[in-house]
Image (cartoon, rainbow, N blue to C red; front, side):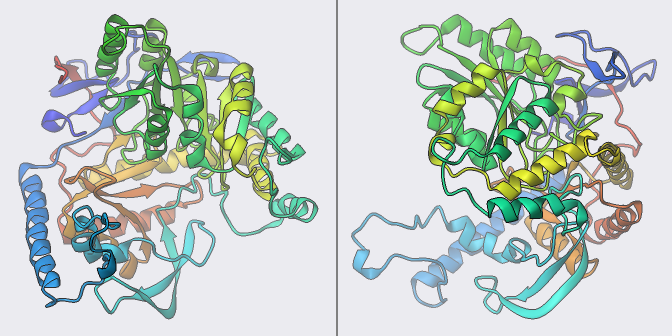
Length: 553
């Protein structure tokens, strides 16, 4: 993921550290098609900004110390396992019963080594119980452990008004009850809490039809279908679209739901480098030339799987270039907009609007309602014949319970709010405020000297911590000393040496809240020595001259 030399990535190409002679930071992208800005007042404008994404490498000594930390932790893990096997140290992990010693192990001992010996040391930084709505401030139940994080007990104390920098509440619509939610209460009184049936049987309500029509209108496509679970929207619908004899080209950083759906489909899967159009084109070209293995027959379908905004990297898909490749090689394109719908684009309509592209050019538009809309579930949108096909063949539609009516109403309310159908412009103002907060937060972190990943417009902001000991110290210090709730992420969700904190900026964050968080980060960064960036601090990333880039086989 980190580029050689720690450079920035512009339009999928690696750039070195030699500045452009004219110092320009804006120019038209003419290769693989022109990028257009979203339409305003009915008139399209050229989107002439380069896709600038930062993936700076860590200094060599940081990488060395990170691997040394894991190596030392592994050695002590083997020592403790030895002590447990001989009964010197108590083993709190799940073990096989003596009566089943000749059975195939239910708990894979070696596979649980990392969990048992490394994760448990810092387990207190995850699964913290929240006892309020996930607004810009929330309440956390204090807990302590008497056995080194194997079990926890609650102290009865509530940590009040913790600044929430971890929830996917991008537009601030996941909040406690107010009068604007009266329609949800009315739906609850009329329809109840659940449907108790699948969409194929007696589980399709007028509320579902209203929601699907509104989603299609919001996305400017022919039709849409909604599902009760966002994860299952990917994992249960991809197998309905492709199967044996088909080829899936998947970005290496795709979400687990996309990976699971691809594996369940039975299709052949090949992975291309993250957001790298050269790597993708090489796979497409080989697929067209050589066809299927052994038989050399043409693939029945070629499906490209990407995300709008990548939740661990904070990067945005290079959609114009990928669309150009899709058309050139006659492939299909499936975009997961879980983190971009509602949060990216001038009016929150996702990456197609961000680049000013026609949503009809994307074959399958997928998204979830769990982030920007403060609800749950997901959708598939696109051509009417695609949606009609999924209504019949989707495993989620056939076997899963329909979306709860109050949840559907919450999504309808959120969509009307964002689209301005409630008679106000507050929804648009929140989308714009989110963009301002995101750019401000990212800019200040860069100026402080932190290494952050991703696109300047992505509301997911990864801050690299690297060393496992610093991951734990960072999360504990921020909550206990600064009353700031953060999410820290490590292996296996990230590469072993790239543990990070992942901030989620919200439109409901005030400038004072962000300044409080930034001040705490500045102090904590100095305390824990987290300011690893070697680049000059600037408000915007610099652009660099292009250099050749060879693909790895």
